[in-house]
Image (cartoon, rainbow, N blue to C red; front, side, top):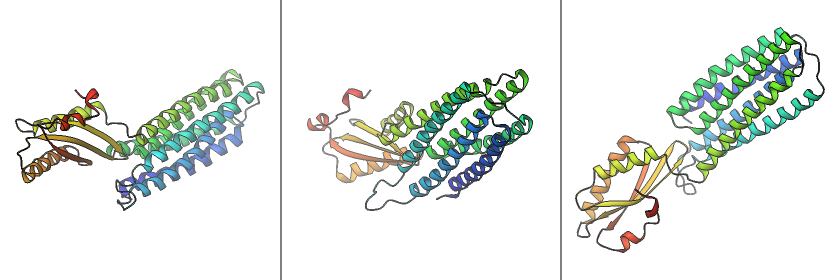
Length: 301
């Protein structure tokens, strides 16, 4: 595993352990269901960070005889699991909050509990920013998922502290579980989004439209007169992109000439996107069969 991916995940694991301890202590001191929900989410953070560490390590393995496209798709399993855990945590938080809503309980030592929650939130915010920046820079859905998870934890903590402040100011006890229920809905939304992105990755969803247009433009710019292409297919596996297409050239072109053109196009594409691996299939443009084998014709510009 490369250091620029490993170190942020290790930092995330350490942060999860520290914030779990701080929030658990805050809950014990105050009895706030909001702080309990915050502590439960930190427990999920720890499980997710450990899962992410394993996933990134596995994804970094080179290709082998049984995984000829590499191991990057494990990242989608990891982020999907993390999204599922977030949803489960949200359901648990909402259930406990509803019970506390029906049976309110007095809260104690709100000052110390609030300070502990704010310290934990500051730690999570710092680590979340690091994870999101590194994840986006290296196109790692695992790091982005972990960063989004921590960022949702930060907003949870802010809402919980706000709820504690309102309880202290108004002495209305049901405000504490009400805040917990609202934050459970927000957390669940984050979880559903991660599960959706993971599903898209596992189902080989095509690259975004702007990327497809840019790839088409590069291919068009490097074609010679009397040539065209079609059946461009793309997918993403972790931080790697894959594409393939049919290149239609004059039937009299030699294998050497066709291969040289393919190499030129591939080099032009990889100059723009170093992690994109493209495979080009050459066909004679005069042959009708070369046009009939394009199953994507209805979706192409």
